[in-house]
Amino acid sequence: MSNERILQAHGGGGELTRRLLAERVLPKLGNDLLDPLTDGALLPRPGGRVCFTTDAFVVQPLVFPGGDIGTLAICGTVNDLAMMGAKPLALSLAMVLEEGLPISMLDAIVQSLAASARRAGVSIATGDTKVIERAGQGEPGMTITTAGVGEVGDDVDLRVERIAPGDVVIVSGRIAEHGLAVMSAREGLAFETELLSDVAPLNGLVAELFSAGVDVKFLRDPTRGGVAGLLADLAEDAGCTVEVEEQAVPISPVALNTAEMLGLDPLTVANEGKLVAVVPPGDAEKAMRALRNHPLGLRAAVIGRCTDATPPLVELITRAGGRRVVQRPYGEELPRIC
Image 1 (cartoon, rainbow, N blue to C red):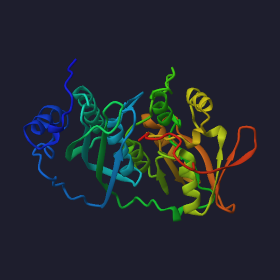
Image 2 (image 1 turned 90 degrees about the vertical axis):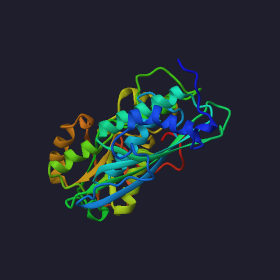
Image 3 (image 1 turned 45 degrees about the horizontal axis):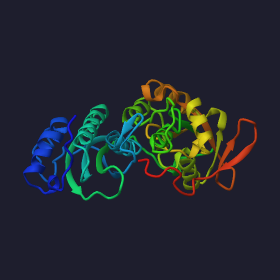
Image 4 (image 1 turned 30 degrees about the horizontal axis):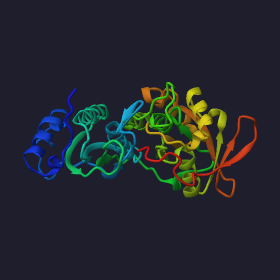
């Protein structure tokens, strides 16, 4: 195994920078848009509305059960576009590497970037690489910043103002797996489980919904703040109460037991491969068929409904038949998970 590491000179713009890109990046990420290594990329003009997003990724550790920072960067950006109803067209990618980062780690992350981009069917069109001094006493790390452009069809109308009492709330699969997998990988918090991050690109799953003719009123992926934070935002923005059946929320026994052991509410734990949708009651069955027609939606479930009860809040109907108000997390229970 090579002992080569990132040097400050790799970020200087000279021969070492050129070699780093030519030998470590372009062989895996190269395409007609990126290969010229110009200051930008000329994209074909889409025929509909344009969606633009940006994000930054600082996860620790860089590699976790089920993924790494490269997988997270591509999927997170693609998912931000998909939650706006957009078909991803191209991404930008900027990597900030700490001096001393093993070249083998960079190779592994770039491989994940490439594999995730292929899975999502999107090109990395332009990018940048910088090297900075090592920031702390631990292992050298890296930060990835992305931007994404997508095309939104004329049939997409995702406005909370359209949500009405009786509308159905759907989640596309088991919750809480990403945040718990990252925590399990951290020093001092590791334990033996089969728990893997759910990180995945959701654009194909969203395409299934719209292709099926579902009247989707709301789409969001429950990342930081989890399902609880997302539904609290929904209730506040739409001015409705959301009733959630705890028994209906999909979660694996491993994730449930892990959350209980760590004293965490699974509803507040981040996800990176799940979506929450709101659809009219008459479209619920159609939406469920569409989601379960895709590998990422096999465990989709209707978890609740919107009501006109006031004041607007999120109310959990517990397994025991009681009720409790679900609030958004006050802070970040699991730091640096995305």
